[in-house]
Length: 477
Image (cartoon, rainbow, N blue to C red; front, side, top):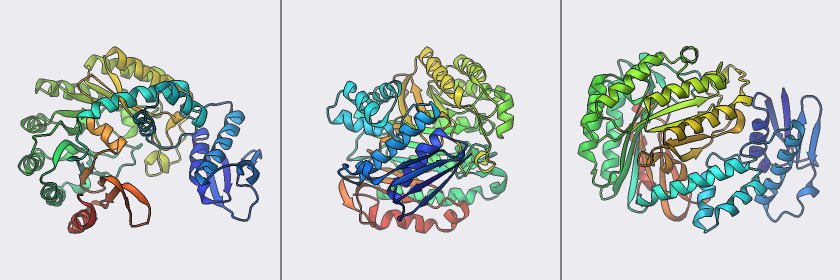
């Protein structure tokens, strides 16, 4: 199916694209901006049906943002009527709905008022609005012990995986291409970490998150070197959480887990994504279901008492029955936290490049609901939520955890209330200032992003430049 969107201004382009994509995830969407056209926006479906929004429709709007919202809502209402569908998150296109809700809570607005606002203004379903409020309240409680002014978090990226999953769009490289050059990456990474430690001296480190990729793609000796550097560079006096994504079971060994156990690592992730062997094989995860269980039990044996597991609802070939079976197997393991992702297909992923058509949207709701039910049976409460573009069924990712096992870093990365200093290829540093400042583009914001290059070879070659980016203007306030 092909859909044409024509806008009079670029102001409307982003929202219109993502609302239309949410209704028609498999459609080819063509966009253009034509300042000479009379309608503010025009939508033409392949079968010839057309919807136009004349300028008179938004004449009463007070400003450009209000006009953008009004045009988006008109398109949403038209598509909802045309398709007979209502999207779970309505016309909300952002990835951080709880950030909006958190701001309203902090302004003293009641949950009842927030739910009504989300439903009336953005057509968010009552169920999702209530879920958003519940999670935002829990996030607020969990963040009370985080020091925004004097504290910060540290992210370290390990951009390697034993194989690249076909749904993945992260900037990871297969291990076999880097087997003889991993030390070069660790050298550059350690140089950047040492700089961050020096620059942040006197500040309070609250959380550490080593992600990727798959951090346990590193050899045990390389992990030991990295963790020893962290031990010697940073004070852990105010450290509340130290997470390492063990991720792929085919990278985890007893020796590597013993290395992690020697250091103050408090939380690890062992992420099967599914417990269906047919799916693991299809998406390119080179491990078995049994390996997931073996590694999980090994981690428990070595004393890890905060283990997260990730699952994806909507992987190709799976239905609600498969998801129920996966959840039953996860329940037998009793992880301390569980994250349920709705599949998001991006252009950078193999599925996206192949234009693979995944027609499971009618079942995503059942899968997501089954995940919530399983989490409840295991005594896990929803504690953070975020969304991605092009999510199957226009749903969300939700993290569930035991009362004292929530991932604080996961909340911080979404709410953007604390500075996160990041090291590694593709890592994004976020500096949070107490007040708005003028950015280089002239805009006002209290958040400044500093991006490292994604390409691993470029990162190694340009490591001094990556350090200079942080040190020149923004590293600390």
